[in-house]
Image 1 (cartoon, helix red, strand yellow):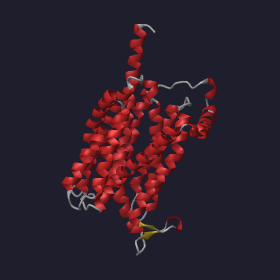
Image 2: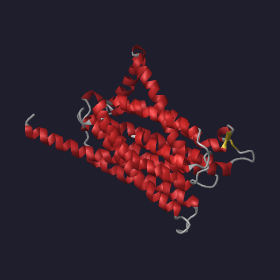
Image 3: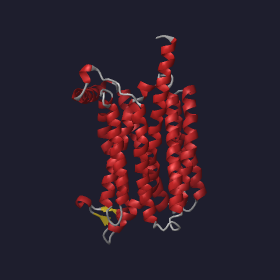
Image 4: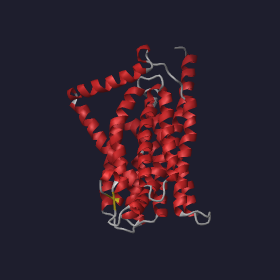
Length: 359
């Protein structure tokens, strides 16, 4: 390729990379405003309003403590992701409709998130179903989103591009969360109930997700699949590849061990993120303002942390950086179990450490 052609190709990549970054900005509103802060405590309150005098719910005839409903919903959505996300990735890698897949999964998730505005009274099942759909679509969209990275960045660029995407995501999620913190804090002056403020915050996350998803959909280019893998053939080939991979995995025990470890530690991290606000509210007796402030701080600390960890990964290798981050995660989670109630300073200190390694 000529020097001019090389420069033009690099310019095209940078334009796509900038558009790609914005999807992290878009979807992080769901992670912060919905998953981490507002939905857990609010859905638990709705579930308690629907519970019988003994504090139990009976969805599908199964007795569940009202305060356990949200953790069960989180677990269900993660289990569904274990089944759906590998299939999504296998199809995305071969489909020429990858951009359509990104838009479809993102807008299904955003629509389900906006539907949480109607959560109230004793409609806990509505909240459970909408969150499950939104979280499943969120995970699927991230898989499709990540599949663009090898197409828009050279191997030497990938750590930097990935880190910038993460960093922009924390910044975007943090900005919307700051606005929702102001709304929640001032709800009395605005003539809103606390529940109304929460429902508006949930709605805003879905709107934010939907609006900014348009940027990567316009910036990323469609790339043709192999002739034999177009249309339904891409889906068939994706399923076949996943089947063959699972069948042949026994010949690669280290790969199986890695996948199992990833499943466990990623599930653990997602559980901590989803239940942090509920744990702080119910067990540590911290006010909603304290919780939102701590999680807001995490977003901006994580913005710098993602950039710093990206630089460390380029210098020392991604494996060492991930191992160090997981060690910090393990220590922080162990210490958080021992936190005494009503000690916001300690909660903020642990939140700051999580923010550093979250990226």
